[in-house]
Length: 493
Image: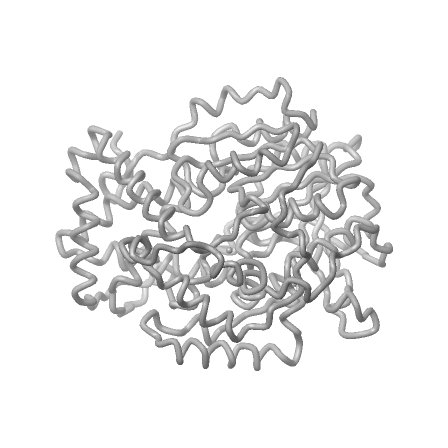
């Protein structure tokens, strides 16, 4: 993955540039919906919906200025006696589009859809809402110098200048967009599901428009007080060692691979010494593809495979092969995850968020660079973001964005025990903001719990009750991640 793309994988300021946004209902605007389909990014499935575009001012302070379109999709509830309060699904990133995200995980919301509409708003700068792409940065090689990253950043800004003023793509503006959509669709109260960065958006919408929020589901939780960035490399290393440790503790996995931590360290040493030329068939079209596999490509695979327990099940297998000098499986995984990440994330929108809301706070934190350097991610992310954010415009951020939150809204908080970005401690911290909350941790799972066994039932029951009191979560205790692959054919029988 390109260095500037990898520094975006945070899961995610001129304080005083903008005053606190007023918590007032946005005027209802015209929004016409018509039949459409939401397509899975790999074209595996389509979801029937109704879609429309809501025109909003790019700069809320200049309603007569440039407008952008917000792509809105509504998946209608099955029941004719549906509930009046829909579920708004907020995607992560920053930079992922809600519509594309939903198309990949729609079955997880099937129970909820029986009684509630599901509303998807591509956040400004993503998907169909004036997506802010930076193709020059996506193509930049990992070994790029600071000067090359700076030049690429300026080129991206120049390419976007004709259709976007990128400073107006922050969370503080995005929650105003959500309120406009709610008003345009005529809902009085809504429920919120936020994943990863979407949990920040959900909590800030709650801060601004609490009377309209019935309940929240926060998955891969970012506490409002937390600045993302400095700890990500450390959390990623911890999660990787936990995944490999699980393999070492399982007889079938250990019998096949020995100690996978030793394989990891051997491969890391080898690729740090020199990059290896590898030729593999492209996973999408089968054409021969040649690449240099080095430390940066290894880091991409390790980071993104640990996001999901299903993908993490492949790690001992590909690392063991690489330790035996067979780098083809590792290279194939790199091509797969790098491409899917690049297609899913709007890099420019990501920069607009993190350069305003996170990076400016790095200097106030004690950062142990030696500890970061000891991880497989190293200091690349911090250093690359620092270069980008010296150039990228810093947009308006509400002065209380990172202030503690206090709410009576019921909240269900979900975490994976092996999450490489937002560990369970983050959910415990965030839960203090909610007087009525429950935090669940699924052992062995990664970042985002939507597809974990029985979570669909738990979420549907929580929304039906809008309460954590008496919520039956017993099924989650039996949830187990996918067993490790001991061959290319899958886990042992």
